[in-house]
Image (cartoon, rainbow, N blue to C red):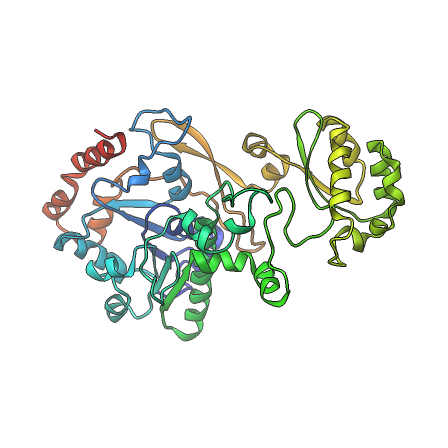
Length: 431
């Protein structure tokens, strides 16, 4: 498809006219496709007849009945259309192939072996649609002995080094409290798709895009990995501190259980004011920390680091969260942030001002807030969340009709959706 299709109405987003087929599961693939939808692409999600398992998964505190979509499905699939077909039978494969034949992009995180078994390998699809951008994200990369190894987020964090440097210095490795590997992979995949679409606008040719959770995590740790290779000391877990930044930088707890990340006092006057407010003015006299460069750890020395961090812990413990927030808010030369919970983040005025959340109407639930498009373009802005997450097979008949399938074929595909969905629900419930 020509990238100029729909270009006369880019108010609908810079990807208006781009058709995306989303053959994905869980987080890593679906979130990449959600970004494309936010930018105006028409994304059609392909699910099995019973729906993807994560459509139904329940999380702590989410105690709604099974007819309410799970939170992962809501977050990853808002603004898409959805069909439910069995890609293992001939008719289902025909539906997907026809869909891909007229598409600009296929996004998938299925294993390569499974894709080829379903007739959805790159070579086969590119033969009929040479302009197709075939975008696949895997756990560990498309080449090598573990190219087709199964992956969940924590496995990629473990293999990718992130777990090794996260957690207390005197305890075991701890994974971060979010699906960092999955979301990093989705961002790299979306970036790869956009790059390939730009290349296609110049060459007229499609191509295969590959990335992985492992590669994406390495991208996120580019500085740390370069340092591990070039320095004589491998970074080790440092708890509330960054393992490579030898200075006061870190998270500290207040007297009433709050916490602050204090990065650096840029100005000497601000550094002095901090210690006076904390009731520890003697710390001002330590010449190991009397310049901004020293306070950000530029000298790379561990001399005095344990001592200054101990003093910082005492300092924050001397005051309440409210007292520290009031003081620090009046110190523009101190870079800091109070550690916020998700509840607080949802109501952060900067989140609201920048449109980082969007309201969607979730069927049988009501209005929910989801993370929206966080990339803003001045001339052709993305349109953000286009609508609610699709119900299972919601657009199957509509999409199949547009592809030229007959009423009887459509009925054959849609007939077993409800029954298949109940089978998946029974699996989730353990019935």
